[in-house]
Image (cartoon, rainbow, N blue to C red; front, side, top):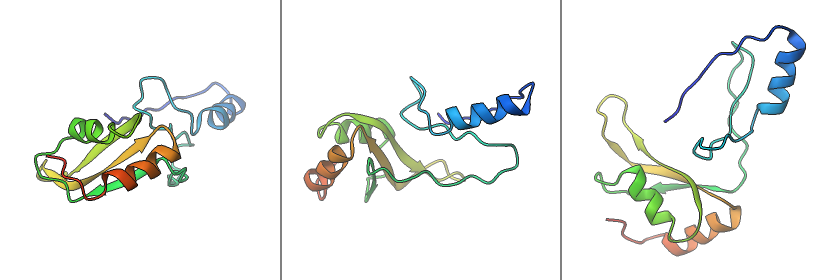
Amino acid sequence: PKGAGKVEFETLELAERAISELDGHTLEGGGGRPLAVRRMGEERTPPKADGRTVFVGGLSWDVGSEDLKTFAGEVGEVSYASVFIDKETGKSRGSGKVQFATPELAERAIEELSGRQLL
Protein backbone atom coordinates (compact mmCIF):
# COMPACT_ATOMS: atom_id res chain seq x y z
CA PRO A 1 0.00 0.00 0.00
CA LYS A 2 1.06 3.51 -0.70
CA GLY A 3 0.93 6.30 1.82
CA ALA A 4 2.08 9.79 2.59
CA GLY A 5 3.12 11.64 5.69
CA LYS A 6 4.19 15.01 6.93
CA VAL A 7 7.17 15.72 9.17
CA GLU A 8 7.94 19.07 10.78
CA PHE A 9 11.56 19.74 11.72
CA GLU A 10 12.84 22.12 14.36
CA THR A 11 15.16 23.88 11.91
CA LEU A 12 15.35 24.50 8.19
CA GLU A 13 18.83 22.91 8.23
CA LEU A 14 17.42 19.62 9.55
CA ALA A 15 14.65 19.65 6.95
CA GLU A 16 17.16 20.23 4.13
CA ARG A 17 19.32 17.40 5.45
CA ALA A 18 16.34 15.01 5.55
CA ILE A 19 15.44 15.88 1.96
CA SER A 20 18.96 15.36 0.68
CA GLU A 21 19.55 12.10 2.59
CA LEU A 22 16.13 10.44 2.29
CA ASP A 23 14.81 11.38 -1.15
CA GLY A 24 15.07 8.29 -3.35
CA HIS A 25 16.02 6.07 -0.39
CA THR A 26 14.20 2.71 -0.17
CA LEU A 27 12.85 1.64 3.20
CA GLU A 28 13.08 -1.96 4.32
CA GLY A 29 9.61 -3.46 3.96
CA GLY A 30 8.52 -0.59 1.72
CA GLY A 31 7.83 -2.75 -1.32
CA GLY A 32 10.96 -1.63 -3.13
CA ARG A 33 9.56 1.80 -3.94
CA PRO A 34 11.88 4.76 -3.36
CA LEU A 35 10.75 7.53 -1.02
CA ALA A 36 9.81 10.86 -2.53
CA VAL A 37 10.85 13.47 0.05
CA ARG A 38 10.22 17.12 -0.75
CA ARG A 39 9.06 20.43 0.73
CA MET A 40 5.32 20.87 1.20
CA GLY A 41 3.79 22.45 -1.89
CA GLU A 42 6.58 21.41 -4.27
CA GLU A 43 5.55 19.50 -7.36
CA ARG A 44 6.40 15.84 -7.58
CA THR A 45 8.98 14.96 -10.15
CA PRO A 46 8.73 11.61 -11.89
CA PRO A 47 11.21 9.04 -10.63
CA LYS A 48 14.34 8.60 -12.69
CA ALA A 49 14.22 5.56 -14.94
CA ASP A 50 16.77 3.03 -13.77
CA GLY A 51 15.88 0.20 -16.13
CA ARG A 52 14.39 -2.04 -13.43
CA THR A 53 10.69 -1.36 -14.08
CA VAL A 54 8.67 -2.83 -16.95
CA PHE A 55 5.10 -2.19 -18.09
CA VAL A 56 2.87 -5.21 -18.52
CA GLY A 57 -0.25 -4.96 -20.69
CA GLY A 58 -2.98 -7.27 -21.89
CA LEU A 59 -3.60 -8.80 -18.46
CA SER A 60 -6.75 -10.79 -17.76
CA TRP A 61 -9.22 -8.88 -15.56
CA ASP A 62 -8.77 -11.65 -12.96
CA VAL A 63 -5.02 -11.09 -12.50
CA GLY A 64 -4.05 -9.45 -9.19
CA SER A 65 -0.79 -7.90 -8.06
CA GLU A 66 0.35 -11.08 -6.29
CA ASP A 67 -0.36 -13.12 -9.45
CA LEU A 68 1.74 -10.66 -11.46
CA LYS A 69 4.57 -10.78 -8.91
CA THR A 70 4.59 -14.59 -8.95
CA PHE A 71 4.58 -14.69 -12.76
CA ALA A 72 7.40 -12.15 -13.08
CA GLY A 73 9.31 -13.94 -10.31
CA GLU A 74 9.89 -16.84 -12.72
CA VAL A 75 12.67 -14.66 -14.16
CA GLY A 76 14.23 -13.53 -10.88
CA GLU A 77 13.85 -11.32 -7.84
CA VAL A 78 10.88 -8.94 -8.02
CA SER A 79 10.99 -5.87 -5.76
CA TYR A 80 7.48 -4.69 -6.50
CA ALA A 81 4.52 -5.58 -8.71
CA SER A 82 1.20 -3.82 -9.09
CA VAL A 83 -1.84 -4.22 -11.31
CA PHE A 84 -3.35 -0.83 -12.13
CA ILE A 85 -6.84 -0.44 -10.64
CA ASP A 86 -9.54 1.94 -11.88
CA LYS A 87 -10.32 4.30 -8.98
CA GLU A 88 -14.00 4.62 -9.87
CA THR A 89 -14.85 0.95 -10.41
CA GLY A 90 -12.19 -0.72 -8.26
CA LYS A 91 -11.53 -3.16 -11.11
CA SER A 92 -8.32 -3.99 -12.95
CA ARG A 93 -7.32 -1.86 -15.93
CA GLY A 94 -5.70 -4.91 -17.54
CA SER A 95 -2.18 -3.59 -17.11
CA GLY A 96 0.45 -3.02 -14.46
CA LYS A 97 4.12 -2.64 -13.69
CA VAL A 98 6.84 -4.80 -12.24
CA GLN A 99 10.10 -3.63 -10.69
CA PHE A 100 12.93 -6.13 -10.71
CA ALA A 101 16.01 -6.19 -8.49
CA THR A 102 18.29 -5.34 -11.44
CA PRO A 103 17.99 -3.86 -14.94
CA GLU A 104 19.34 -7.15 -16.32
CA LEU A 105 16.41 -9.08 -14.83
CA ALA A 106 13.98 -6.55 -16.33
CA GLU A 107 15.53 -7.09 -19.78
CA ARG A 108 15.40 -10.85 -19.31
CA ALA A 109 11.73 -10.63 -18.32
CA ILE A 110 10.89 -8.72 -21.49
CA GLU A 111 12.62 -11.40 -23.56
CA GLU A 112 11.24 -14.44 -21.74
CA LEU A 113 7.74 -13.38 -20.67
CA SER A 114 6.50 -11.34 -23.65
CA GLY A 115 3.59 -13.10 -25.30
CA ARG A 116 3.17 -15.69 -22.55
CA GLN A 117 -0.20 -16.42 -20.96
CA LEU A 118 -0.39 -15.52 -17.27
CA LEU A 119 -3.75 -17.03 -16.22
